[in-house]
Length: 252
Length: 316
Ligand SMILES: Cc1cc2nc3c(=O)[nH]c(=O)nc-3n(C[C@H](O)[C@H](O)[C@H](O)COP(=O)(O)OP(=O)(O)OC[C@H]3O[C@@H](n4cnc5c(N)ncnc54)[C@H](O)[C@@H]3O)c2cc1C
Ligand SMILES: Nc1ncnc2c1ncn2[C@@H]1O[C@H](COP(=O)(O)O)[C@@H](O)[C@H]1O
Image (cartoon, rainbow over the protein chains, first blue to last red):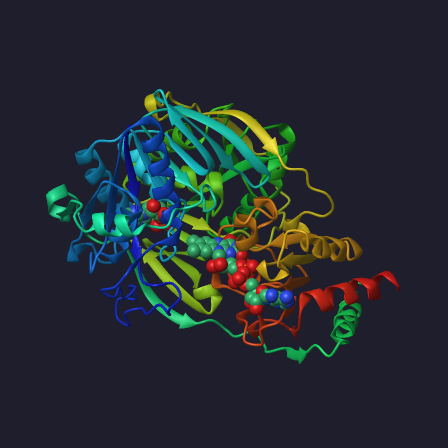
């Protein structure tokens, strides 16, 4: 089974994000981390490849920087990585991203493509579906459980009321939610091995993807602030303030 | 007049609420056609008419996962009818259909919009970013239709008093190897008021310390006839089902009162509840970000405050 996992490097989410004042694009430092939501995809991919034989290839678009995030995913056990880095891709929308990823995945070959449900920095939440359409395969989305073998894939698809069991033939794209599996921590050996693994670097023109921008952010302004409320230290009686407010709001 | 299409999914036999929100907005933007996905019924169509749909294109995917066939059918119609704008909700199935449709048509998608306007040849959208502390304006010009995903609860639902719409069947093509099938539905048991329409919500986060402690949230909710909500942290930890998650990847809520217990107030949580009318937060860290939007903030331990609050309410 040829498994491809789409992973994104993002600025460390515990820091503050900076936007370029002119273009409003996210400023991406050299040191980026693996998007936490993608760790679930990597783990899922590794488990499927290990259970049924096969390989895991990472595909990523964005400035490669120090490649810390990619190495992190390789250290978990992925076999190789394809990184598409091209200055012309700055500010790409979801569709260009999906076109780039789809072209890179076609080149690699695939039975199963795994993605997250939304990225932490962009959260457009439509890249997996676009990818599936471009690859002409089903998109089994928001998976909380995945089984893939014998040419078939079955998932539990999260819904607002519970979940649906959805099945399709391989090849397919599956997007996985956080919590689908417990991502492993890289071992020391994994970290050492990752340094020797193959990372192929490509540009948008290698893949024949048009990079012209379709959407632009015209302004970013501070939102009107919510009026500050009161903050009190619990002295053992603070719950009475809650009761008072609930009465005032006619909840009780 | 611009031609505006609204994609609406059927939920429990009726149009999804977010769809009626979009329909209400769409009326002010142009002539409205609804693309309705689900089994459909005269009553459901009447509801759409009442909210301003003059015409309904009805797609019934049966047990097929809607995304591929419905997107293909809409794309085909776009060729012959050339709508200016198609609105979707930022929800699961809507995202699936919108994503596939946009890729098929080669169009951009504007995600997570909280408002949308048509200006000349462009669509202009508003987005709340950084947990709602900043407002971004985005624009897509060029080829139509423009495709926009709007966050639930961005617009009120207002009936327009229209009659029954004209309903046309939307034939779904065979999508070959892109097909997927739904083989089972599982509905989680939910008691009491639903998160989406409760007037009061009591939510819990990791600060509760354990799944058992969520019982305090449930008891409080019961006393206030409230719905229970949760952060992603405790959903991922398996303490409560996903259906309770509030936030960017969960539900958007706007109750009269939101009580946050042991919740830090991460951006992705705030974006789903910051428009609640009154926010009460209990957190032992005085610097927790949730306090920046709370009308009443209590710096304290949930294990002290909640039992006393529950007792005080029980003794009333
Ligand atoms: C792409 C993406 C999407 C996301 N979507 C969502 C989403 O939809 N919804 C969501 O909620 N999150 C979402 N998150 C996660 C979000 O970033 C936070 O991790 C999450 O909201 C934190 O949950 P929490 O407040 O329960 O936990 P924590 O951040 O761990 O906070 C726990 C709080 O409890 C307080 N506390 C501890 N002990 C006590 C005590 N005894 N008494 C009182 N207070 C106490 C602590 O001071 C702390 O502030 C998303 C993240 C990503 C990357
Ligand atoms: N630039 C990228 N490189 C690799 N994978 C990506 C990229 N952007 C999005 N993805 C994948 O698509 C998922 C959804 O992202 P998004 O649609 O941007 O919210 C992510 O969790 C990734 O798995």
